[in-house]
Image (tube, rainbow, N blue to C red; front, top):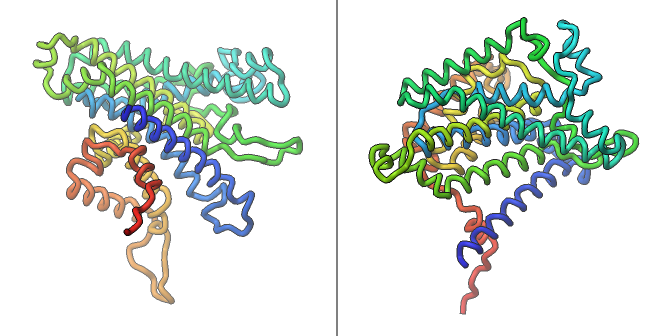
Length: 398
């Protein structure tokens, strides 16, 4: 009974959070003369979108590194697979010749939006339904492609341990990035050029007949998809499979003695983690409005790993909180350090292009030194209990 109440309160808290995101994004349409920070083009919404995507990828990496104890550095490679799968499937057939103009067109004339538009109407609600279904299927297929490749690479590399596994997965990601930039595969990957012209987060904004935006959903969409995926990961962690993952992390010999198949459960964790990394890669492509292999470097993997460490290895809510803090600091709060500042007529020393990353690195070092287990450690933030505490009425004095 208590568990059901706790789950219900958590569900209500998530719904309130998603509704708040919609309200925040559309606030400027109802209240005039708001500060610039609440405008749709402000850094606030850029941070919210990117952090929502990064939180999903960070949680998927934490499932593997934190809950199963497998040190993998191939997350950027699986994100690349998801991004390209989504982009190739979602570019309309009429635009593929223009996108692949250097290679005389695309090898695949198939397009999910075209397929669903032939089933549903191309106007009004039918067009919206066809786009939503096409995007959902493309996201699932993006995860499936990443999961399939992780299964293939997992057969040899999951027999390795610790640093060797990290090196093998990092090498796989770098090889994959080089292959996708190979000009001979241009009819599929567009070579070193970017693929664009597919639906992005802004495509979900509701418009009127004249093209004006009635309701903005470009921030709500990544929040909704990331939240649903993270909830699935949480359910997995709390299941019998999740307990098996934790036992492998704590002691492989003891886990095997209790009848847990090490290779099968490691493979399961690796594939599931890669699946959600692929979905995260597709969301990242929607965020930047293009898919290009050179964006998915090892630096991206290190960023995700840093978020996991800062949030706490073995904490889902820690990874989510750290994602928003990391993106906000790197993309918004510390941006002023990259430009010259004056106090009256006196120029502030050291402030120049690149100084932001110096200060950001120092901040990260301080966090790691004083929070050696991360912000949350291996604890979780209970949204249901937090909502109950907020809604609790203060007792009256007698």
